[in-house]
Image 1 (cartoon, helix red, strand yellow):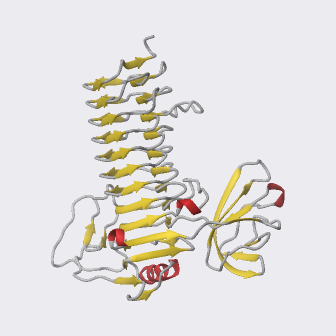
Image 2 (cartoon, one colour):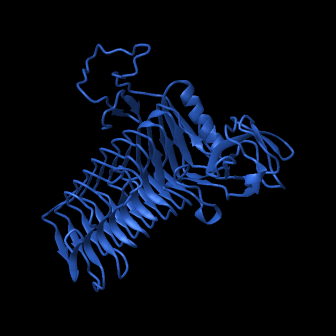
Image 3 (cartoon, one colour):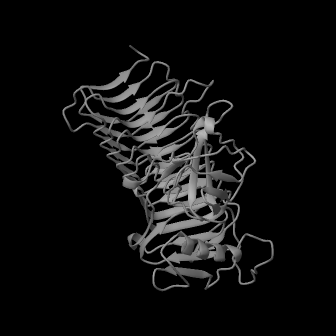
Length: 437
């Protein structure tokens, strides 16, 4: 169930209900303008996409997007993608009320190899075109990411657009730039994009798909802008039974998104974070996922609150199994297996740039944190002025030669930490508490 849902919708025969009492009677009717669906229709709109057979036949983003747009025009429904490998030149953009479903691991969405070309002419913030230097295999309909420095203060700026018309090396964009791309700052254009994306939409279900980012042939796209799945300013999304692998960036990233559920997904082999509940996201639930061989398994970004991470397995992630920090408060992390992390099992980050940016009032309980880091690894590292944290009933174990590894390290400025009922085994020094040197 989606917490705090303001409106229910039907997807794939499964009702996503509004929270609170519901009245189900034979007298319920569909009423114009009322988006709290109460009728359990026996048949709903479904459009199929297949490589040889289907309502829409094709092997790329254009076929899938055509089906999605058809369903969107009619308000809501399901797009079911058949077996095969679909090679995308642009993101699939998901509107509100969409149910996108594949055939499990038999349905693979991947992307073309990326290419990067410098811009050959200045573009001002009000322009809707760019000029590329040299030749490359850019085509009409391609998704691109434009990167350059802001000419006024030097900060990096990232612009995602679609190429919609061309004249030689001049390309028109689907939207205006709204940022200056001047030659003095050496801007570039690259064929980088999320595989699935959505912005300012709600009530979407994504399930039973395999997403492959073609890591070996693609440059990096920062997780604040991309990933195999990337959501921005969205509400009430469910992502379940999805394999997200091999992206040169994040596996699943959502920024300022509320009531997002990620369940029973396999997120692995990504260059960035496995799961990235992003800045300001409220009430995410991440349950039953396998997160392995990413840089960080689960990265709580900035200001993520009232979230739950439970019954996940985070294995062999290169840096941390789980990382929580900047103003991430009031979250619960329980009943997870966090094993073979490259540096730290669970990191409470230090962020001293504000008055109180630490991960306060969080609960870490009933987890199993095993074999964390190399010789100086730490199972749980609590840094900065982290406050009001409960660490309870966790099994913290080192099965290798303990070397200089530590079970729990507590920084000198940590306040009101409660340690209750933890089992710490296999360490020469189970707890290092710098509050009491």
